Length: 188
Image (cartoon, rainbow, N blue to C red; front, side, top):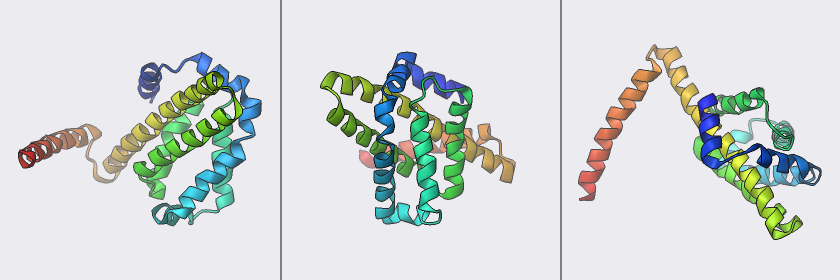
């Protein structure tokens, strides 16, 4: 988890100044929470494949959780516990049947909604700085959720079957090599 946070933050150039920008503008950004949450769940409930997942849970509870998460992004430098919690979102997604395609698409949805509001509210240069800071932070979070999902998925397989994650990785590597060669042959 720490390596994913470090690598993602380094590659995205996420700095404390990005987090400070969000914290400094938080009074305005907090006002967007309800709209962002509403559009998020309106989208999920309007698409049959995701509606099947979310309709099992009270919408109010889901909205409350997302709103708390959004507001937590505006509090400055995240704690170690914050990053750890993002990692374990992958576990919740496995348990609820949320595929990564849904998570990735909906994180992009949040980013686009946030960006739209930035450019409606602030001058162009300032809007870009705020959006860029939010995008970097949420992209690091996305990396953590995806990697947490994969890591915890492998650990779940290990717990149920006894197959070690390193062996799962090796099996996936060998099978992917075989599949890649088959793809190249079909392509030619």
